[in-house]
Image: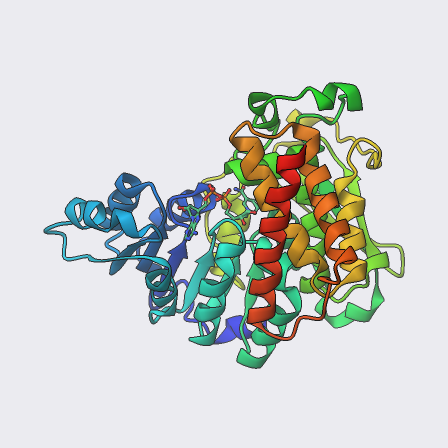
Length: 402
Ligand code: NAD
Ligand code: MG
């Protein structure tokens, strides 16, 4: 992957970039609009897409003078229309309207919908020629080959927003891509880093939602507690960067100051550092290859004083091996894993599943998929959809048995 396509984007200091934000009302979406609010001359907001939080979506649309505001939830159409009446801002609702919003003429699209639901609109934006600032990791996990192949066909510039991948993107020496020996993703270890497996078994919702360093949406926060997030990120890294599965490593780094590293054949290790605030990678992705100001706090290493590193404990956190296994199996395995995880996390968030059963449901779903021959090659988006639906329904069945 190279940054060359950025060269054709309007400069952030020149004509305003036309920017759409998919998932505007979420954690990444709000941080994106916060960065944008410091650069009102550099960005024209085109489409803002949200789901159930109509009040916030309408407020954002008015503040940023969006051309159109779209809710994925069809039942909320009248509410959104009422909230934006007299503003001159177009309103739409439903899954197809989300895709159409993504297809609006834009230079750049922030893909920050959570889950596999982000795939179709992000691909649609790509096909219309927009550069993609990619926060939604699930679309790479469930359709990485197809997604990156489409990016290649379209000549799309995909800049990762996920802090680890954005770090790697920044330190990747594109002249020496064949000299990479390892990519090392750092992991905070989440709220249960020091807990025994017995303690983790008793973890409740509030404890799992209590991330020590990052303030994020609920799904990724639970994924961080189970460390499934790191497993998904390994799959994400595999698709974004020119490495094999064996070249992917994870290192637990509790302070979340080093956001990831690349080791080269000469022994050099290049890292990107910063405070744990997503507005830094967001600003980087929005402005690349230039830099713009981000309101994130500055890193003061003398205040951090100590940086620590540990190996991952695969017994307490089996999700990472599960993800690496699915990545090695390939075909529909990561798609089914992702879908099962989305269902299991939703069940945990609704207090219908115990914490350790999240990973158990994913494991059981993959085992069942393998037994019935559902781990099959994936040639098109319909194959992705079928595997996703299979993973969801099987995971729901598995969750009901636990
Ligand atoms: P979030 O739950 O805070 O926000 C999700 C957004 O998606 C909301 O705007 C919601 O309205 C919208 N949405 C949900 N379902 C939708 C649907 N079916 N159709 C259209 N829109 C829908 O999530 P988040 O934490 O902002 O994460 C967004 C994505 O970014 C995820 O894929 C996550 O893994 C990734 N990410 C987040 C962070 C972070 O710090 N929050 C860091 C790295 C990567
Ligand atoms: Mg991350």
